[in-house]
Image (cartoon, rainbow, N blue to C red; front, top):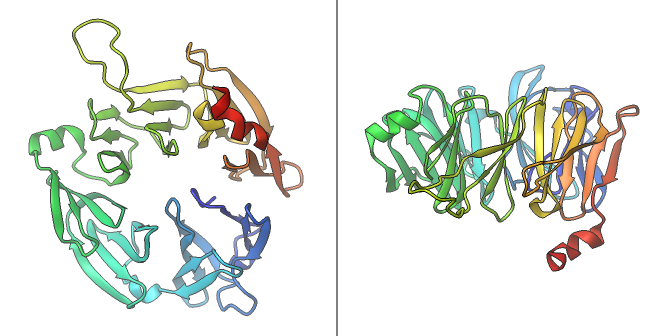
Length: 345
């Protein structure tokens, strides 16, 4: 799934000619590559994507070696361009702002470069000794290995220091590794380390020490679904009422369940009253009860090693049928009830 869009990519084999793009709004499936494309027989190695963007950066292997393809799946036929010349080294991570999709930021050996797809040029080392980075609202956010965290222009020019406290930085961030930075709003951001430690700019700053593998922000809210391979939880940044005592109650991860086996995806559903998660081949729905019971029920089993896509707008869950492998839609919530929910509360 291309999160935050109406698109998902379906594959029936390892080659690009085996892939199609499905748009659940129009209910149309389009080949990822057109007939006659020189890359149709190339094998897909990896995919880079960002939330709310219809763009994909594909690393593929073909007769000419590894290539990087820039693909826009929006439109009646996907647009594909070979941008291999912009990648002299294999990047560890590539991100872009959905509002500026022709400006890519690629990290290689702790150095960040900006790739201008329109000009076909690379601006190397717009930031060095990078420990983490992210983009939001046409701004670049960089955390360096000295613990400084700053907001910059897309050209790399520093605009504002957001953290310049070495003592606090050493307490919050590991000196090695890489942090993915998600900007939830202008004053709320989270840092997910490659070892699963979760940090935020809100007290108490560190929320988990390791093992977190995924985050799903609540649309328009201040909550995150947080999951490890075996656990699913909610982190809420909304103010909570005091329950007595003189110490402030800071946000924390409230674990809904800890008996999972191989959790890989999670979605907010029913306008945040429930969470849907995929544990291996099984999809389960969790009711976020105020009394803390959090009833869990099995929904359906899906095809092995396949993802799912949930569209809150329609209440439909898209999955690959366990026995046939066909793309199917399951109605989790009737559309009329979804639109009526706010009036019923």
